[in-house]
Length: 100
Image 1 (cartoon, rainbow, N blue to C red):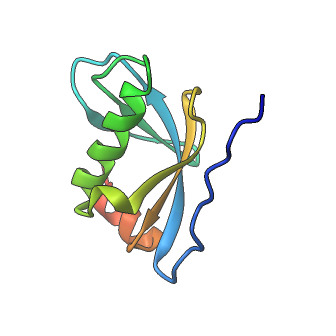
Image 2 (image 1 turned 90 degrees about the horizontal axis):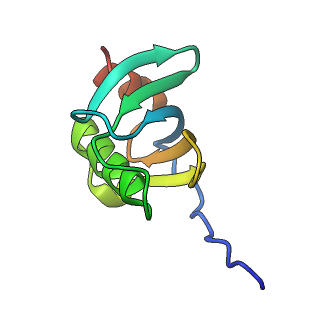
Image 3 (image 1 turned 180 degrees about the vertical axis):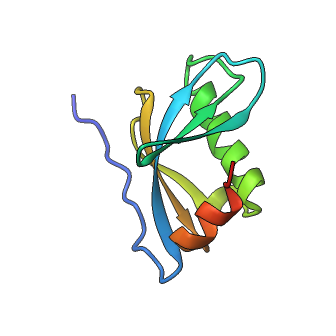
C-alpha cells in the first residue's frame, strides 16, 4: 500500500515554522508558554480521528489573526510533538502575537 504524501507549497517571504508540544483533552484551548524551542499548547479536543489537529490549526489561526488556510501541519500528525507552517507572518510577528 502506497501512502500519498501531501506537498507543501513553497514558502513565501513571510512564513515561518513553529515547533509545538500539544496536550489534548484539556479543559479549554490555551497557549501555555514556551518549553525550550517548542510552544506548549493545550487543546480541548481529543486525539481521535484528527480532531485535535483540526482544532489546533483553527485555534492557532484565530490566535494569530490569520485565515485557517495559512496554518498547515507539516509534521507530527499522530504525535504530541508537531511542526506547523504559518504563512503571511514572519517568526518575529508570530512570537509577538503568542506572548504568554
